[in-house]
Length: 308
Ligand SMILES: O=c1[nH]c(=O)c2[nH]c(=O)[nH]c2[nH]1
Image (tube, rainbow, N blue to C red; front, side, top):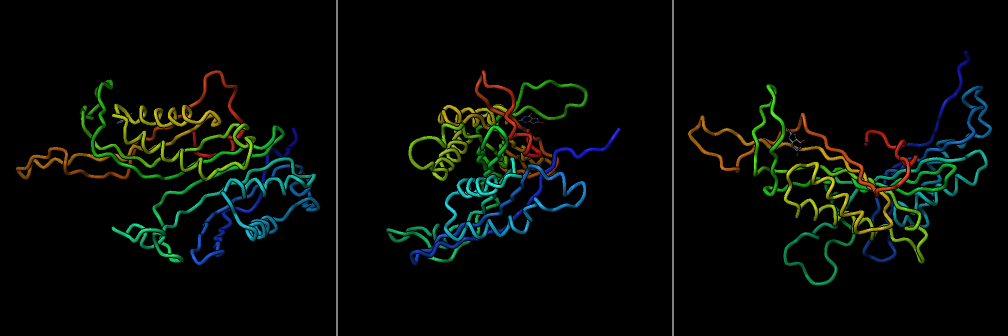
């Protein structure tokens, strides 16, 4: 038996990049965390420390900043530029480039009765919620694959959610309910079919991201939910029905339980108004929503940890 090197990749993780577009007095900021990882023929460095072919992780980081000098565009476009740049080196045969984008809102943008025209301060911002936009470009022998997604989009509906009809055994204590709070932090990744990037004209990843996000949220809001599982599948199905060039979508949604507090000891009723928001344990509902007849699992999914 001999010991051999298995799959490997390397690069710089979480390169923090803030880009200010100051072409007009009304600045725009793009705040990203980017991870670049290369795959290919890196046997020599692992086996003998021969770094002849190793593109230093420091160089990968610097490339991110240098590319940002000409503008970032969408996270997907920046990642595609990075992928194509590194893939031009003969020893690089694949890789994974990943971005998380943090939201900043203009200060004053939410002020009631604002003046017509541009809303919010020109160059002062307040960091938004925990929500992040995500993007990933995966390269292997089969070519480039683009995923887009979002993380930790916290949503809650105060009615329009039930949970009943589940089996009861000697360990079941959960009461059935026909009216509960449904709350979750939506994390989703969707995979663009090659036809999305191949369409005539520039691919508008920003516009598509906004449309998918809006559809996920309206579906959450409008479906009368009999289970979080039903809501999760409906959100994914709505996206695939609306966009033929999205091949599949995967969702991961914790059930952020809100338990009705028993106020009877205080001589009070509680008609669905006072809740205890538990943070753990939580249900965790995950599903891939796919088109029937699609082939085996796409290789990109094995590169994303902690996801169905
Ligand atoms: O929407 C739900 N799905 C479950 O599977 C489940 N299990 C549970 O205890 N509460 C809920 N809610």
